[in-house]
Length: 338
Image: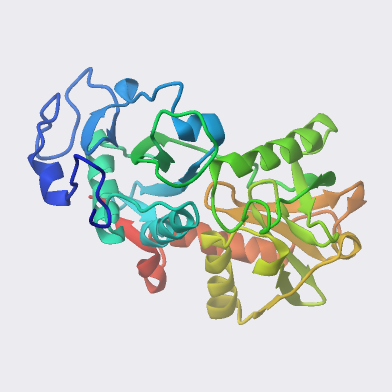
């Protein structure tokens, strides 16, 4: 079987454009009145309401699936929707799939084009969240990764804040530990691994905090429940490294690029102790879904002076200008949809 092929199906972007759509769309991509949001599944565009899986689907039963969360930002003045680091997200999806003994049905560049087409067909003109998911689609009982078929679905929905970005939040270092690379690799976005994030987030919020900070098994800082972590101390920007069981964050890499290129601030990548957070000048969490969220209190300790710090504030301003297409120097981050 050729790479990227499912038994009985061969996908290509050319085939996608030839497949009939249930409700023909005009060339502008504007949906006819009453048309549901469409997604892409099984090699064609279908109404999101019709995208179904069986209850015996392996990815549902055992969490054998991987996903990405991609944002697109609307710029009203330019009349443009910008997909944020779409190619980088699909590269990471491909890496995650490899860890799970899978391959996406299309190469990265075609997935980028497909995602832009999906946004156009839905005529989204507001901030949007895109969720591609690649899953083991065989309906079978039995724990394994091999000898299973796979399927992919991509949907997009309007989306606002995941956690607060305009005010400082409180965080708790929770009792749960981040899943180890020797157990469920955190560098891959494996759906089953997000039970660990759910345990962490609920512990923090049920204890009255906004967000969780999760430690590794040896007690070093890993990340938030679903965000990477940065700390500023004595003028140095720091973040845990990949050996601390973090997701290799797309937004994390972007923050380091902005810090270096715009603030002339290099990032020190090293392990961080829990108690170091308490005496940090600034702490913030970041991720494509979370965006950038300042942390002003951890475990009842005030971080810095209890307000959003200057480095965090500067990075936030740079980031939100960049994702809306207002900084041409970082146009390589963006995929214009219209």
